[in-house]
Image (cartoon, rainbow, N blue to C red):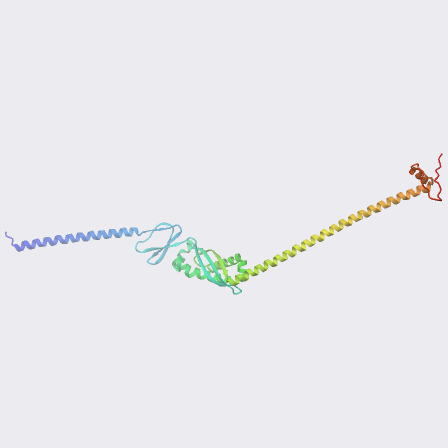
Length: 306
């Protein structure tokens, strides 16, 4: 059997073509397997989500909120589910504002609002605002500014300084009522600073100095009055003591006079009853000597002796 050259060429060419097609199919199969493997790896890795303790995960499926994930490791549908994390810790928003008091005094204020998102309100917060930043910008800051201005406007400038605690309590209560339906929990509003114009602060300082001077004068007057009362009481006590002394002296003199009068009366009565008592007293008092000189015309004293 003879095979011509053309036939051999055709057979060789066909064999080469069949081998190339098989090789191409093998490469395509291998590439597809690799792609599928990579897709499975990516899908498996995208099936997990992790939420921190102070956060909650909002799970969205094609943009629709389906659930809120708790802290820890959780699962989601790959390629379809996405997670937005919302913090449930305490947050503080600090703001500056200008407000007018009841007596039309301009004040620069610094206030801080502390809040947190309850776990039960995470879904509502995301549905209405999308994030904490949007909540603060669209709701919290605007409401807080209005509430602080309205409450501050009910106080005069002097009252806002003297009754700072009551001002803070009124602001907190008004804020709580205003944000009662909002997806957050108010922890407190702190009025950190209230400053007025320099002219007004100087007038307040002068007024306080005047009040201090008035109070000092009043205290000095009360002190002088008390001292005068003390002196009056002391004088009255001294007068009463002096009067008591005089009365005691008068009673002593009276008693001595009565005693002397009684003695004289007794002595006179004794003399009247015994006339020789006078001579006896004279004899008792005589020292036994005669007088050295006599008055002319007087008689020599005579003493009768037995």
